[in-house]
Length: 553
Image (cartoon, rainbow, N blue to C red; front, side, top):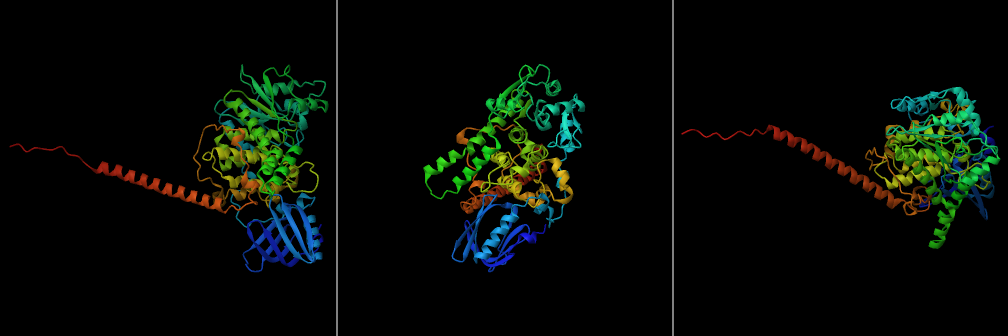
């Protein structure tokens, strides 16, 4: 298919662009296969470049011969284009709708993007499973890498290389995979060096209404327990939902078959509920009534902060079991690709200081989200403004990033990265020039040949000149476990995402710049004190105190 077939009117002059808190811009609107571009007539440097894949929905309005297209974006931005001429306006709107809803992944911009920067480090090879496992291998010999899924035949949503207990052979793993939802057998998610406890993740066991049993499954998860120790199974579904799953062939671990494990149910809402929550929250944030009761009522009705609280509470429970109870943990819900990953990744943020660095966090996203099979293509195909009925869409990854921001806000000195880094990941998960978040799992990414045909987001972020903008000026390495508060009073609306297009950030930006200036000035003073202290020590060594000598009479 040629993009030209979808572009009815490639160029329109005298178009006026309206954006929140920015002056109106009059200029020329151009449509390409992947971008909506508006160039100012007055200022050659004033341009808008908007990826069609970032457009969630559009609305058309007409007053006489003047048409208006309102573009609502997946990053929650809303822009308005005033287009002279009804036919031109209808053509532009029709073209945008067609170009923003392309069915084929290979027609998306990452397959056409050619970077203007030199790729120093190939992000596709930066966080390979073998490299991550080396850190575990240096602390314990109880785990091994299995290539049982090298052709994706055991579990299509798992990567080809997985960490499993050394005492469990590949044939046993194949039998366990048959017993777990979509073949997602228990695998190592995190090894706690402090006490040797582990966190695993999987899909639900397929016990069914007849209480089916799998001794190989019992053997696998029991292999992670120390002598005399119990483990915890954290099920991210309510007991009622887990019971209902048995009628559909799913279920949960029966105590009689897993006597060394205690099962705990913590309710995290499923994807369709979360999508509704996001839609209601964004609607509340865009409400211009300025009525306090209405705002608070809408915020509460969205249940967004309630969802944040439940996810963080469950992650804290998992971390507490590992660090304070000295017990290993298995986390799963139904599929093991959504709430399970939220819990395992947030527990690592709490427990592991490495995950609170830029590269450590990238590794976490790669390991616990991309390689672990979170279906980004399905979950992020629509945002809060789409007019079509949600099918698979859900802000699962955005909720995870929001939870990380909540912890970052409570521990502002314990993270190497800043809020802008989290917002960047949110934006690129929904629309990007990079191939990192395309596809739903490693199998699909291999079929699409993404490492060969697209550029990784990490290739750009990890360039020193680009990393600098994501550094937290308050960061001081903290090797301790951090325990966030999950009380309602401690959780706030993430203004940097949900209100950034609704109010000017000028005052906050100025305050941030002033804070950086103060920090830099403080560093200069400390450096001078250090230098002066060194010189003072040198002076002291040079001074020779001689005893008084009295001449004899």
